[in-house]
Image 1 (cartoon, rainbow, N blue to C red):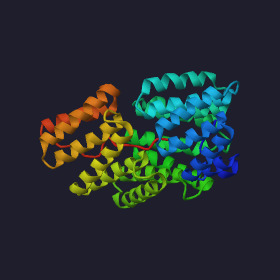
Image 2: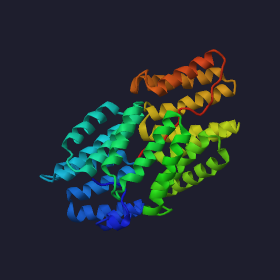
Image 3: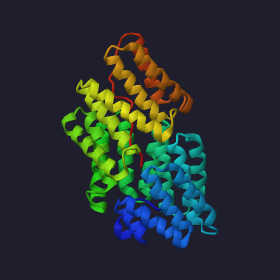
Image 4: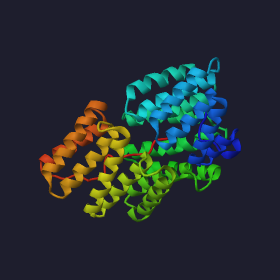
Length: 348
């Protein structure tokens, strides 16, 4: 199953461009290949590129077409279904994503394919707040790849770092993040989007340990890089704007934090709509920011909207829903909480 691959492992010109992180050129090459061959594999590669660029509907159409054209090619059919299942997770349809990924896991035969599906399940379980299950999936995937120079290994370390970040254990997450940076720098080079995402994840862990002076310029570089690579309306841009806003809030730069959170919110709503759990994360943070300014009525409005989204999409027992409810209670009791949790995290 395809992962983030080094250029030396790529087969076609399109795959080499994709592996190098040259996504706009890869899209042009993929469209040219599609016109020439119209094959299932060409649709699959184009879908991967569109997903990376944030064009989720186009990616879904490509994956469906790849599956329908695959015929007896079980490899392409499986990968198309796995990637479609992961798109369900990105859109916030977590239970449907889990059902499909589990079906795919039962069909997978090769160890690398099983590892890739377990990685996607780990990401899903983290977003569902099922942290122990997420850790088991990631570690199982790493065991399957032990002793192999597989491109998924770096992403698994990235995701283990993100899991510890979600658990509130930044010191435990930092070694995983640094390992991911090390692997991807060696495999992909310093100008690749995957490396930029690794460094942004490391910045989040440094921020959570109070190292704002190191984290802030890392977030700013990530925002500039992702805007150049993907354009201004992309999830990676929103993630890093959100986290830069949290830095500004900690520095008591309230007006700048407000501006950055609102920009984050606008991007997320454009990508996902107004009722996605990632939108609720930024609403929660805006609520806490307004509480710190003594604007309790506006704070409650943001927090109640965030809680409603969390409860409807994740359930009231999810860690984000519980945190948001506690934040609302603290506003009602006159005690403001720290305006930086929960936060968005990049997805891999």
